[in-house]
Image 1 (spheres, rainbow, N blue to C red):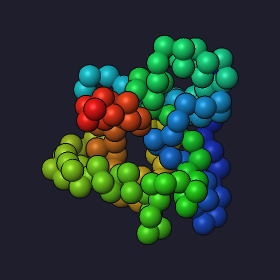
Image 2: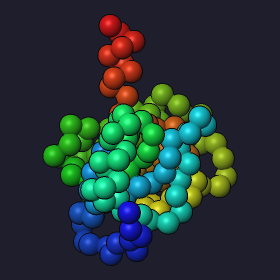
Image 3: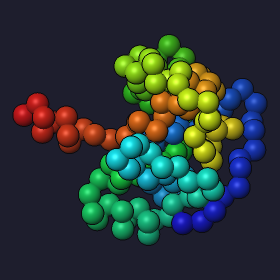
Length: 143
């Protein structure tokens, strides 16, 4: 892993980061998933191939960590009507939580975060509840 400084802004929002990306070489490690939600790293840190390999050997890394990477907009199945549906859906399920709290969680990508850009502080307040990949749990519960 290596520390990466803040990215530079590009015009037209083409440099937005998806805060719910998969574990891959070059992704930013946002935080660790704990019992009360995500515990964020304050320093922007990119993961390398060795981290990806080690994290993948003990199960799905996205269940234990949160990663960010470039938002691919219409290249993502979660993109609809010119925005990310992940944060819209989660905020719809927890409307009271997205407006509670006065202090935003620490975050190393807020300046380029797709969700913050789209929904502001409400997205930040609900963000710690989001775990990227729980498909195995859903399949087991319905099977």
